[in-house]
Each structure stands twice: as C-alpha cells, then as structure tokens.
Image (tube, rainbow, N blue to C red; front, side, top):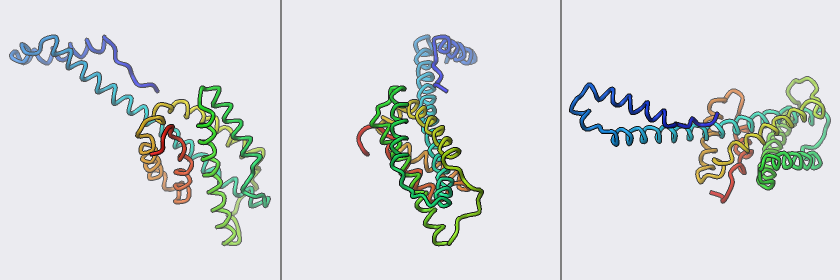
Length: 223
C-alpha cells in the first residue's frame, strides 16, 4: 500500500482542531495566530509522511524477505527429489534458463538486467547451499526423512517459477530502498526479525541461506 499523501484539506482540519483546543485557553489562543498554526500543521504532516514512507519501505523489504524465505524452504523438496533420483545439485542448464527468464521479466518492468541476474544467482546459490547441506546430513544418517516421491519437473519447478515472478514484482516495488545507503543494514535487520519470528520453520541452515539469498539485493556500492 503506498504511503498516504496529506493535502490542503488535511492541513485545514488540523488547524481547525488546534484552534478548538486553543479556545479553552484564551491567553494561548491569542498567541496561536494563523502562521503559527500553519507551521504546526506542516510539522505534523511532515512527521506523519516521514513515518508513513518509512513504514512503506519496511513493508517492501519484509515482503522481499518473506518470499526469499519461501524459496529457500522449497530447497528441501528439491533435495529430496535429487536424493531419490541421484541427480547432482548442480544443474547449469536449469540455472541458465532461470536467469534468462527472470532477466527478461525484470527488463519488462524497467529493472536493470545485471542487478536482476545477480539477485537471482544469489537466490540459486542459497537454494543449493541448503540442498548440499541436507544431502550430506542424510548421507551421514544413511537415509533421508520419510517422504512421498517428489516430482521436481512438474511440481517443484513450476512452484519456484511462481515464486520468482513474485520476487521480480517485489524487486520493482523496493527499488528505492534497495538503492539507499542503509539498504544492507535494513535487510540484515529485517532478516533477523523474520528468522526470530519463524524459529519453528527456519533453522540455522535456512537462516544462513536467507542471508546468502539477499546478499546482492541492494543496488550500488558495497557497504
């Protein structure tokens, strides 16, 4: 939801409210002339708009983090499918297909193709990090968790494709905050809050992967 924009009617309403308060105190009312009231109204509106914009930016990052977490959680299903089939984690042709697809989708929304490609390479590496770790854990245990057969081609990959479409839209929405000087700090804090609130579904491995997935989300110089 875009931040609310205050207008002249809002300012007039605030002035009227301040005047009504002032009428209860004559001495104060004499001092609160129109100029002072307008300054107070402007200060109130400015503060409210700043808060609304800050909240809007936080919400945009929150959505980007949430969707990235969804993609990471799918990695376990990918690992189970590869456990059953014996397929390797690395799949260069699939990765190339994803990068080409998301880059085109990003360009249609006015996003820089290099930025989009770098973002999704990080998403893919995060997914593979989880796969490698889980597969190694299952090999040490001698078995994978009990599960029904996982169809990678017809079920999991289409699900990943839908998540990627959502991520493209969220990259567009969050362009401004991802270009801010505080972007990396803001993302780190947002990830930390998300992980803390979802400890039942995100373990240490997934938390590390989430940091990796968003490592190239910010635009501009490294900080």
